[in-house]
Image (cartoon, rainbow, N blue to C red; front, side, top):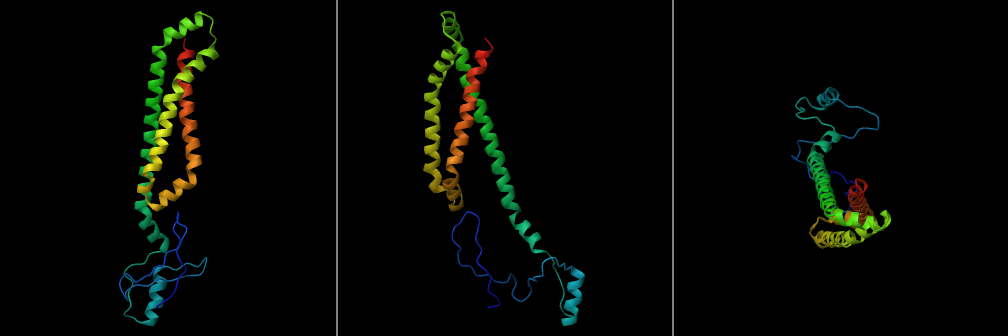
Length: 193
């Protein structure tokens, strides 16, 4: 045993699993720890190693932060791609929902005109349209929430924990966005009358 290090807790996990660290190439590599604020460059290290033995050479000299960023680069790219795809799917969903509701209100434009001519006020028309569209919207929201929880068993443990911790916020955000979009799709055709 060369040394003992503190357990590493990954983000999104509550336990610290036991780990064993082995050198990448036994005997050919080592890690240097420097004091806070202290800098060590390749030339200084080469001089120090030459004092110990002239046979010791440096093949690769990298800061731990550089290695960490190289190792995490793939994860960052995956996260960015997932974020872009999520935003794109939300935009497509929003455009589709807006288009369907807007088209449905346009089809009922004559009916709305007749109701207005018979004395119905704008609030009554809006209430009628909200009542007609709230059931399909509610069914869609509930089925999507059920689907998310049904497939949550297939997700990685880190994603499961994040989903379980953040589900009230995600649910409120989804309902708010879809509700606002639906209301906008209902009100814009009525405004243009």
